[in-house]
Image (cartoon, rainbow, N blue to C red; front, side):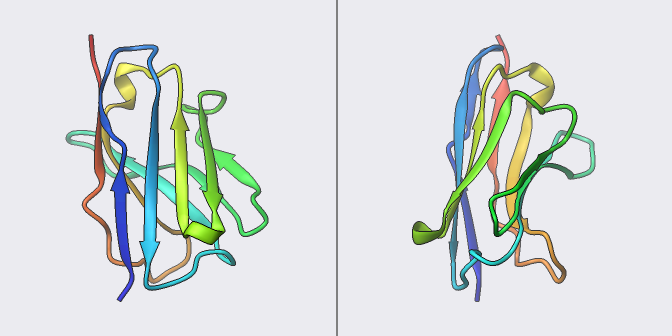
Length: 115
């Protein structure tokens, strides 16, 4: 059974930074594309960043230039460095693989950007 554990969220002021982690157990992700998603209150879950097995990265336009996705294959962990945070970045952040079927979703990590 694959388990995803997201961590690193918190309350931060606009312009601040956070580094999220996603630890994957029960499977290796070194050969697949991994994604970070977020879900704002009252909105659908949206894709914000992805990283392929070759470490090619892609970002939603709303976070491009501010967020950086990376991974450590040895530790089976994916990271999301978030800089210059804005209030609209508030939400619960999740990771999962790109392909279907998805792994069981983790609990996510709450990010709140507010002054």
